[in-house]
Image 1 (cartoon, rainbow, N blue to C red):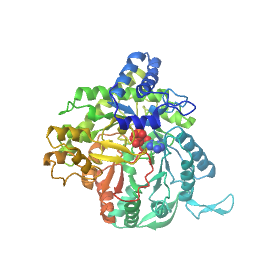
Image 2 (image 1 turned 180 degrees about the horizontal axis):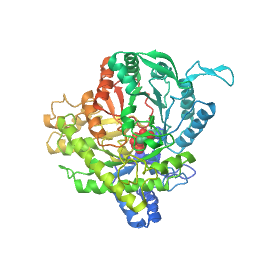
Image 3 (image 1 turned 90 degrees about the vertical axis):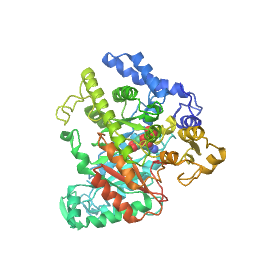
Image 4 (image 1 turned 135 degrees about the vertical axis):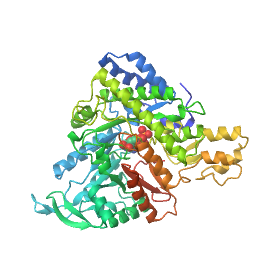
Length: 561
Ligand code: ADP
């Protein structure tokens, strides 16, 4: 296999490679990829496919770092815990029975390496009556605390802590409490939060009028809120803590492929997959950095990788064990895949396109449209071979497909470290820096180093000087055209982040996980502006992160950039 860099070696050794009962690593990286490839190829046997040839193809794609599945697949394939998906949504109904069932199911999902999302909108508000006991209800936010505490205790076999997404509808009477839940140190460390907004909320906002707050237990209107105040409050807390974000439920449901099975009300922890209760999704990401010839996109190779990726992920659904039988049922009904990309910024560097440019946004659309079309073609082909997803007939998909969805943009927090590429569709963090995870990882941008050598401005002292800066734009030694290719997350203004997100979203079945970075000096009003622009751009959800905000991000080991 291609040699891995030392960051990849460290990440794999610490979290992925199998260990014996004494904790000693008993697997090499190549051995891990072989285990995963051979396991995933087994699914071919059920459909008269070629197990061996497919195994080789999967192995080659992973060892060449052209494609990697989500972490649970790398960790669990071919082991006793054959749970391969990263994303889950669990239902929470308005009863103690349901709340504690969800808690138990979430624990099982976390233990298997997955992240869980919940809508808490069905829970009666704080102070409402509890008929059975004549008592007073404690409300969604207080129950979320129990989920948070439970998550803290489950360490996923020592590899990573669990992660949750908590969603509450803007029309819930406790919305204010929810919006400000992360204020104060350490609250809800294991949660990302999103306020769900819909047409009713935005029509009221546009009209400058209040909207109704409804008790979900009785469907009675119990008060009103000013949408502008709610947005202000959300912007204020997001300014301080990074949460909450917003979900645009109408946009999400416009694209719901299986409305006959229900309305989409929640997403997985990082927001890239809206799912029905008990649905799950297996993710995989194409490393774009390995799909150029150094100057232009290798479209033929990309097409091949997309087709391989869809087959790989569908095989994962065939083989995956799920810790809860309801998940097994839903997963088999819709067979949702989340094929996405990483190394987008690296690819732009090869194409000599600055990240913050109109050209980059146009190219993003062209690229993702290609991947989308090819992934649907691959899924249709699989439907011919294996049959369409069982819920296909009443779905919005005109032609038989094997999967209700094929595409997603995930954060690729850890797998991009293994692949040695820029994360997801994000701009780089810097050309050289220490990433504060797993005891400190030294990340150096190979493309920058190569260009510096080629152009004759490479020097160890320069690299040392650039280390841990958040921008290279003011460094004299670096030629302007090179500077332009290495815009960092901090150089790219909010509208640049959002335009890239929107360009990808247009061609993605599920959603796009993207962090819109704002400088430390940004105001609360700036955060609110991003919320409003996100709505205008028609994305499905939005997360804003102001540099210096208390970064109690859920994914401690996989910060979002
Ligand atoms: P990776 O790079 O490890 O495959 P991503 O950063 O792309 O993962 O995240 C994809 C999804 O995996 C997240 O949205 C979430 O659903 C799940 N996930 C990520 N990190 C964790 C974690 N620490 N615990 C549980 N689930 C996680």
